Image (cartoon, rainbow, N blue to C red; front, side, top):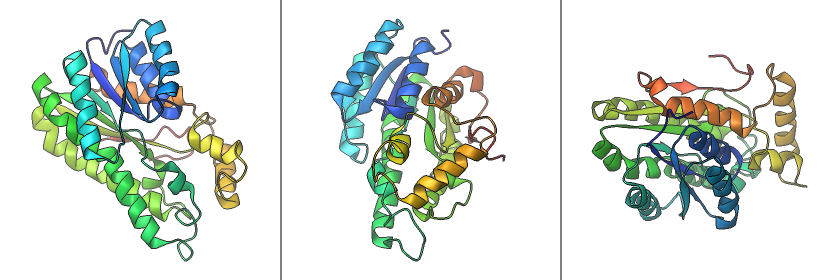
Length: 266
């Protein structure tokens, strides 16, 4: 497929999990993919798959919570490949903190100081790279931002005060940006996920001893049991992101899509 031919995409957290699935699908559709993350060695494996598919890409390190880093990542993408057309803010900023019982747990028991700090970091992790890309997208005559965030921002779930605050706010921010940036032909959409196989959250819940609380693990087990179409893997999420990033969705902006296998219906 070549529906993203000549497009340059930046994917944060693209070295593994959902970000890897997104990066590989964008590349399969013809995009040049710039992977941002913290682990260059993990990135090399993803880039090898991208290059094997006949696409181009590179790795640029940077902290998604740092404005200067995200400005530099996007500038480097434009320098190497001539511009930026697609941005997928996927990395969460501090996933370990998001799983901590002091941040994810009953409202009466959580540490609100840590929760509010986490929310600020998580929002920054999504918005900074998008803001950095806007001038480059304007130069190209348009573009697409696809936020990847949590379904907890759409469906109230016990124990998820922090996620609901962050993700719900991001969803609304995405709608605001879709209105502001429409005049520049820049589309902004959100993809909200629950449990995804072969992701850091999946590994923490089911493969690491003590990776999450028992309450957290039981919630995941219930999601798996109740998802009519089964549990998504990173490629499933990548398919949805690639559609929203492409001209197939050129008349779609301000939308929030929940590929949850029928678990949630909106």
